[in-house]
View (cartoon, rainbow, N blue to C red):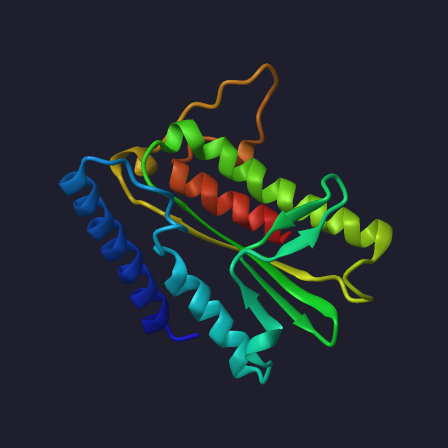
Length: 183
């Protein structure tokens, strides 16, 4: 994927966010989430276009929060799924974290891990998606602020924490999280 496509998706994300904040200021109402306001659509479109460039039809790549069955819950909506010849090839989550990082950081970890675990166990136990294990993707946009970049954040716990996270900023912790997911 060309860097320009990602850069444009990021620019669209922040432009739409600024536009929405301006509308909120004008009407005095609190805004909805990034998805409802279309902030993340550029990233969804970029990923969708990769699959279409690989000769999948547009009907094979589904957006609009399609539901997939889980193991621990009956179903879960994903942001983008790819189905080829009735086999689930990939499922994606698109998330962002803007502000309140300290309050929501662990929630993002738990959401990503929980969704992936639920789908993976469903596949292991029931094979509802076909014979091929689906590829799971997590696309994440993090606002760079003083809070996200502050080094040497303490990690208080009743037991020793993983040394991989010692002294890291929130940004570095997110990067480590994604690296560990990949492993």
